Amino acid sequence: MKAILIAALAELVLLACISAFLRSGSTRRRAESMLIAFLSVLPVLLVAHLLTPPDLGFLPAELVMPIACVDIAFAVFLYSVGFFGGILQLYNLADRGFSLRILIDILEAPSQVMTLDGIMQGYSADRGIAWMYAKRLEDMQSAGLAKVEGGSLVLTRKGRRVAGLFAWLQEFARVAPTPSEVA
Amino acid sequence: MILGLLAGLLWFALFFAAHLAVIRWARPELKASIAQRLFLAGLAGIAISLWSATAGLQGSPLAHGGLIMAILWGILTYVGLFVLYMPFYYTVVASLSVRTMVMVHPRPDARMPVAELLEKFVSRRLVGQRLVTMATNGFLIPRGDAYALSPKGRLTAAMFSGIKKLWRLGAGG
Image (cartoon, rainbow over all chains, first blue to last red; front, side):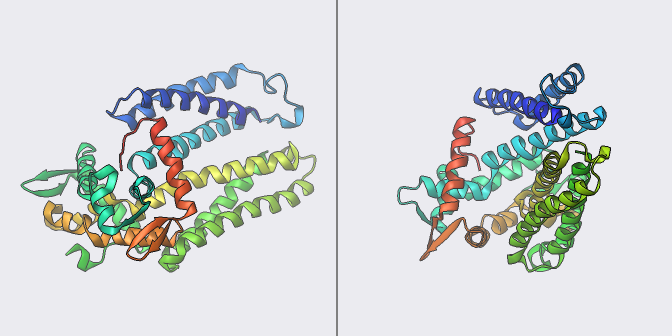
């Protein structure tokens, strides 16, 4: 039980730090800064676990994990899940989610009903679908996966490796583009 | 607690294996609903297997903490692994950036004109397909040639709109 309580407290501290950072209005390297915040709170969690008694002074004996290293590992696991599967996912969805943005555009439309053309033109508060795709291309370039040369998108060596891996995974899941789509 | 941890790991391994079979062989329109049922079956499996296991191993260090703690640890382990795995799965099957790279990769010199990419990805067809998927998943309701939010879609949109305002993320998308 100690692992769960300490991981939950560490997650709340992390959430407060990340919320303060995001609300400060900084728009540069947000995900990287969030990862740094995650790694900064991690030692605090470990120290808190090592310095506090196994029963935290109030837990009954049956709720105390008898093997301390398993308890610590479980606390780190829960803390990591809360960040990578929780806060970071929430941020990615809220900031970049394509389908989610369409839902919000329809919610914010005066009639709350939109046609396909209306969605394409009004996407992301009237920026349009072309803006969304240009943003993806920019992100690929800033991540070092691709570059634009002479009006073409060219994958870098890193981009080819990543694309090869995802192509294999898409083949497995049978969602790979068909030859006619690629041609 | 240790028994719960082991049960969580085991049931996630079973879920993962079954999910691989689903994404490989199930019909595309059924994949999401089957995955959801598999996930729920795993939760039930944890509770049922731990109920009998803790009774059989009473007094053993593995069963320390009793049934409730075992189920709590089991479910946290299972759900934790699930929330780490599923975003990766959706990145593989749905990310536009991934789809772009996979499309460019087999071309000579891994190069493709941006104009051609815009034709494929900034298209009525692509957005139309996404709207159909969202309607199939219960987020949108078709109204003639337009779409309205379903109650589930409205709740999701309102929740994330609130998060965007709280974190001052701007329009994004």
